[in-house]
Length: 389
Image 1 (cartoon, rainbow, N blue to C red):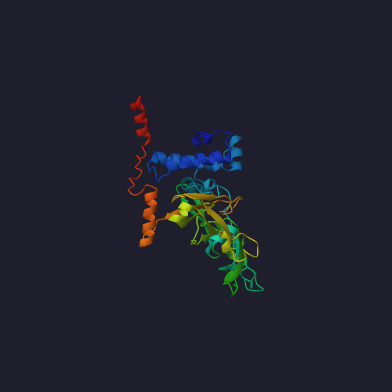
Image 2: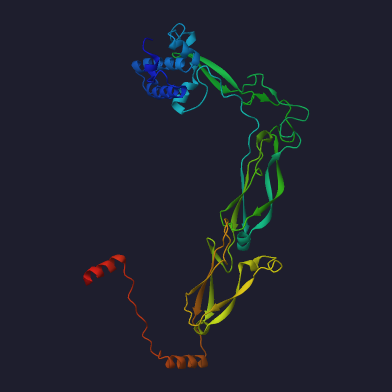
């Protein structure tokens, strides 16, 4: 091979290892025989692969930079073996062992457990002011018999004799590229590098068992439907007795018979008779605190008087500041009360007589109604403005 190896890969002589690897991956994807089966591309693929085998090895690269022969007898000889992992990396973006490098090593037997999720329903007052709940959860816990090791008491995992604890075994094949060396998980130990000759009978070697336990979750004030409360390390214990994942408690707020929630504001509708809307009145309004079981003992306000001014129209809203839902980050929303003035649908003769007398006094015996023009669009108002000028 007479061409400069750096030129073959299209990199500068001071390029770092990552730059060289990226250049090789790019060329390998273009020139691989599965993509370009013509002889010229195959020959070029051999050359860039050989160049990468040299430049990815610090010792061979240093020898080449000093003017030495890094191939030791030419491409394709015994000295030209390289890891097939680099070719796989070029197509699948893996990060396995490079030429002359080591494998991934044994899989850890001890791993973190999965997170768990449960859903609970709470009342609106509980969501607003917070509550503590006891939960019964079924999760994997560390096996108490073997302490999570997976081996029967008095025994321990031993190194795998097949892979000698590496978790991988090498397979070597000869091809037109030279020696192709691949690493595969050891079938004897399933890649763990160790075997358990005498598994624990309680957990069957997994290091964990299923168990039901009781937890207390503190739900903070201001939560809403969809809010998740995180309980760290209360989820599933991992394989091999590994650290537990987290437990998430998702909140579902039940509908309330009086109040509806919009963000941190509460809304409700109060119906009053026509006479109360005309003359004005005062009504007793419950607060959301009234739903709390210990509200009176705690001295909380459970009701208040809401004045309805004389002449109140149906649809009028009264905004009561600070009587809504506390926010998760502080503050408190408002209570918005909508007034619905009810018109009587059934009148006895005396009530009808009095209403007709009132209508006569007010000159409303034959009302024509207040007919107002419909609201115009922005473009309509602009057109009228230009027309007026």
